[in-house]
Image (cartoon, rainbow, N blue to C red; front, side, top):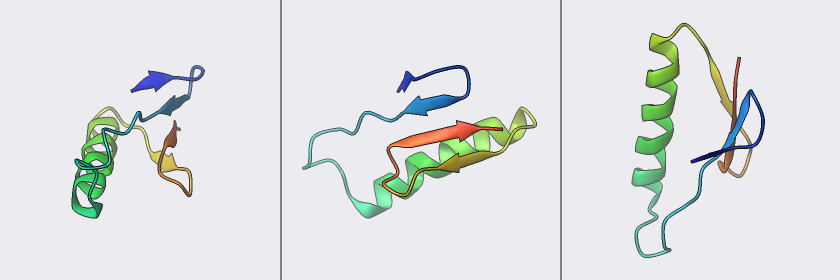
Length: 54
C-alpha cells in the first residue's frame, strides 16, 4: 500500500497468480475493518486500486 495524499491510498496488487476475487474482497474488508475501528469510513475506486478514508 502506498499513500497518494493525506486521505487517499493505493493498493499495489500482487502478481496475477495471487489475485483472486476472494483475496481482493478479503483485503478490502480488512482495510474497511481497520479504519472502522478507528472511527473512519473507507470508499474504494471502481477498479479497487485506490481508497479514500473519510
